[in-house]
Length: 220
Ligand code: NUP
Image 1: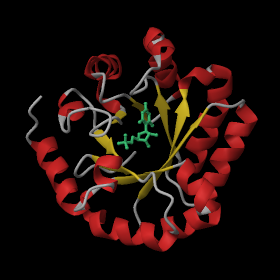
Image 2: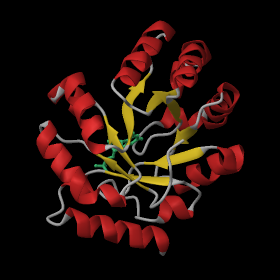
Image 3: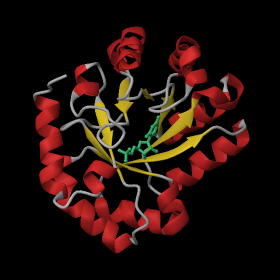
């Protein structure tokens, strides 16, 4: 599970090298609960760069690979990201029970948290049509939590009412995609995921502090 203090996860969608990424994170490290990385880092600094970044930053790292392949491939990816020091991974629930059950078991054995994507911040109409099924599957498999969009507060409320308090809900789509800061958490999420609104700010620390203020005192 992601340790929660501020409720903020940074989506580090940047093509910066390890030094620049580590320096940026150093400026807001005390204000965020986790760093979400993904294709940007894999394609730019590569796995060894990710391992170096993880070691240098000393934070919970979440790999947003939206894994959705067949079981043995998913399992391989989870083993390899664990080797890199990554703590959690996001998987596509549409991959279905047979492709998720084995990987979730492998992840649990390694201490890697699995967060299941059950709705998307834009589009994702098929996801929304099968929300109950996918959330039920996640509960049955024992994932750590679910990714639910800040742009669809009703979905956050539905998922929270379905799963109760034992699962972490991570909510992307805050800021650049239109989700109001603080409102995903006000509607039942545990964490808000923010990327561009912080990454492109002229004063990232000030902007991060503003997000935290809005999480503490939301106006939704
Ligand atoms: O439904 C989703 N929407 C979404 O934006 C699921 C996600 N994982 N994300 C991710 O959240 C997306 O890949 C990006 O890393 C982040 C949002 O970034 P931004 O819109 O705050 O820049």
